[in-house]
Structure formats: structure tokens, C-alpha cells
Image 1 (cartoon, rainbow over the protein chains, first blue to last red):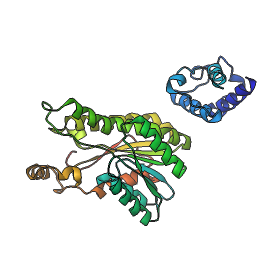
Image 2 (image 1 turned 90 degrees about the horizontal axis):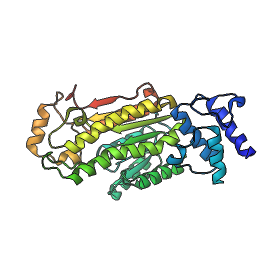
Image 3 (image 1 turned 120 degrees about the horizontal axis):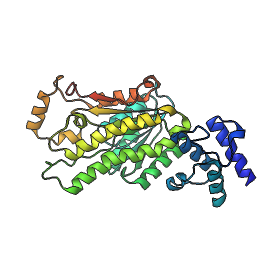
Image 4 (image 1 turned 60 degrees about the horizontal axis):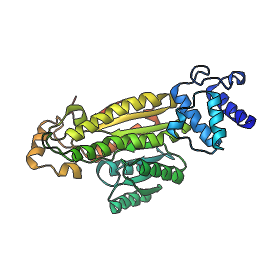
Length: 77
Length: 247
């Protein structure tokens, strides 16, 4: 769990240029981290690469917060 | 050369305008994936011509209206070249009929290949281009998508759709340094226009200020330019290449 969060956090910090302290589990990509729709699509693409998994469009639409991403990845591992 | 080291995928590249674009991109330095639907022998001829220019090329069969096949084609292209810089959405068919006589499958077939196909291939390449933070997408529309044309309700609707799709895709992807433009050819000498009866051709010529049909190379040169770095500030546009028919 911790390791997944760490890797997800790094991707978010790199991609969105936010401070690590802002990347909380309940943080919404769009509302709290300043991502636009395309940023979220790109984040999902990077998560797919980082964790070597495919995230379907339907599943991707359910990922709105940092916690959603971490839980999704953990559930598929 | 202006496209040195770039890689391109051209749909419907075995004949006509697509063939000419594939060869022109190679002439300017690009390696090219030559997509075809049915005419494998013709596609292989294009591949041979490109290889004779000292560039890499391979033929790949795909029905662009089938999302599974499209995904495979794009994957094979990226696997082969390691990148994908230029997409030319050129594949297209006609099934002309008066609206009153047009069958539902004539409508569906043309919309599926000419419009849905552009959507599917564009969607499939976007991931790679977003990662690269660079890309060029050039959609071959048609001047009749701007002007309308009796007997081509399906084709015109699809091509007008492509022009709208071009504008939206351009807006969505601009922030990722991907440009998307359409070319609207007028009457170009290809297998598609060779099928027209002589009196229709004569009538067409009267509407063309430059008083001649276009050649595939008239389209290919513009497509190749839009693919270069020099065209970086052009996006969302529809370039009419029609001898001045529609202004």
C-alpha cells in the first residue's frame, strides 16, 4: 500500500507540478490538484505504464482522487 | 530534409491520394507505415517505392472502422518504428446514390470508414503523440464536405464530420503540441474520380477557376508541409486544394 502511494505520488508531483504535501488520499485531481480532463487522462496513462497494467476507459472514469487511484491499483495487483 | 527521422502512418495508402502522400513523406525523409484494406499487391508496390528512396516502410492491412484492428495497426506501427510522429487519415470509400434511393447500408458503410475510421485511428495514436509531446494529424476531408454535392449525402456528411472532428481534436490536443488539420481536395484524378461519366467531368471543369483537375501530388505536397516542423503554428484548419472551386 505504502509503496503504491509513494509511486503514485511521484507521478502526480511530476505531472501536475504540485507539492508532495498536497497529494493526500482524499485530494481530487481536478478540484484540489489543478488537473484538467486531459491531465487526468495522461495520469492514467502514466499509471498504466508505471504499474504495467491496462486501465479501461470505464474504470478510468471512476478515478477522481489520489485514493481512487491507489485503491484501484491495489485491487488489480 | 524536412521530415528526416520522422515516422508516419498513412491510412488507405495503396492507391490514389494516400499512395502519393506516403511516397512524398518518404521523399522528404520519413519512414512510413502503408495501410491498406484490400489491395495488398498495390500496398507492397508503395512499400517498394519507399524503400527505393532509402526509407523504411511496411504494409499493414486494417479495416479502419474496426477498433480492434485499428489498435493492432497502431501498436504494430509503434513497435516497428519506436515512435509515431505523423498520422494521415486518408482511407475512404464512396457509395454514391441520390438521397431518395440511398440504402441504409450505403450510408453506414461510408460513415463507418470515412468518419468513424478517422475517430478510431486518431484515438489510437493520441496516446503515443501525447507521450511524445508532439504530433501531426492530417485528415483528408473533401471540398464537397464544405459545399455539398448531389448524390453523395453519405460521403458529404462523413467529410463534413471529419472537418468538425478536426477542429475539436485540434482544440483538445493543442496543449500537448499536437496539431490537427484537414485538407479538402477538390476533383483530383484518382480511381475514385475516374469512375465519373464524361459529361459530369466536363461539368465539373466549368466550376474550377484553374480549369483542370488536380493531381494527387497537389494534395501530397501540402500534406507533407503540414507534417513538418515549419507548420507548427497551423492547427484546426481546413485547407482547400481545389483549383479555386470553393472560396
